[in-house]
Structures are given as C-alpha cells and as structure tokens.
Length: 137
Image (cartoon, rainbow, N blue to C red; front, side, top):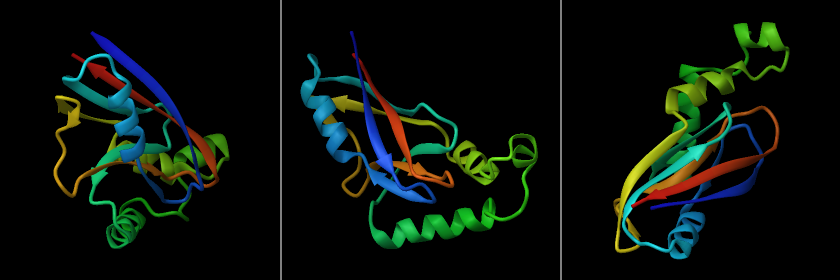
C-alpha cells in the first residue's frame, strides 16, 4: 500500500527551521494503514529535510555551522550563471539532503524522544515550500 500527501509551508527563508511534527502527526493519523516506512521529501533544491532536537540553541548552532561550511557572501558559480544570489542555499541543501525515511509502527513514527523531523530553508527570500509525505506499508 502507498499513501502520500503534500503540505505547503510558508517560510521566511534565510535559515528558517520548521518543526514538521504537526504535519507528520496529521499525515499518519489520516493514513488508512498504520505501519510501514515513511519518507518526508523536499520538492525543491534550496531547502532540506532532516531531523534534530528542535530547540533555539541547536537551530542557531546549525545556522552558524552552515555559515562556516557554505557561507553567504562569496560568489558561487551558480550565482554567476543564474544571477539569483542563492548559490550558497543550493550547496547547503545538497549537503543536508532532500529527504529522510524512518519506520512507522502502529501509527507512531519511530523517532527518538528528542528527535523531530524538520524543514531547513536556506533560500535568500521567503518562500512557500512543498513537502511530500509518503507512507509505504
């Protein structure tokens, strides 16, 4: 069986981190079966899906780390080609990846106590992001 749903999520861009717990709970509650493998996917190239302990200190730590690894400011080859100034956002999203997968047992995501699914938006402007949830069971 396969169940899928897409959510639209407004972000401010520029390092916004969105906790997807509400959407995940709603998605799993609406599925017609309750065990399998869940995947959450970004459908764009300047944001990522991951897990973390969703708390302000760690969000700030992640943004500082990514500024060191793929800083805003330098000209990226992508910027030279497209002129949109978000080459760093593409690099950051590529490093973290577009999706996560985890088991679901009896309607419950098998994530750790302090582990939330998150969207990280790196683009240089506010966006509405599409996030695809899929349950295979």
